[in-house]
Image 1 (cartoon, rainbow, N blue to C red):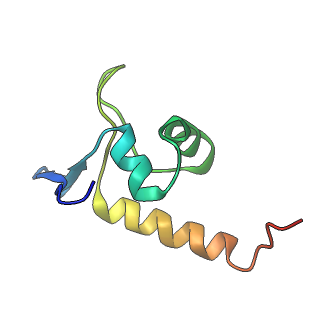
Image 2: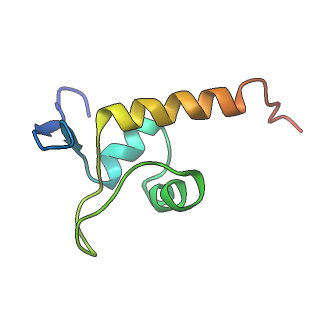
Image 3: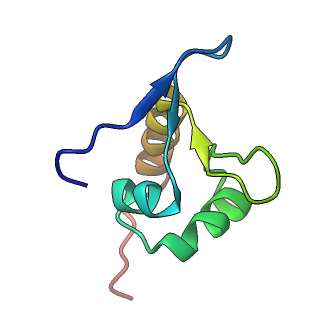
Length: 80
């Protein structure tokens, strides 16, 4: 995604960062197939308009979710 800037649009909710599955996955460092799991099971604040629309999320919501995940899993040992 080097050199690509996310598309911003204003709304009553504030700026919305439009990304497709691959861009969101790239930003989070996960496989694009994992986005739905992150939304459904881990509360990633992304949403779709219509059944096959692009994932959308506000930058502020993504930042807050990432901070929450960091605090929730800080110090967890995954080498078990």
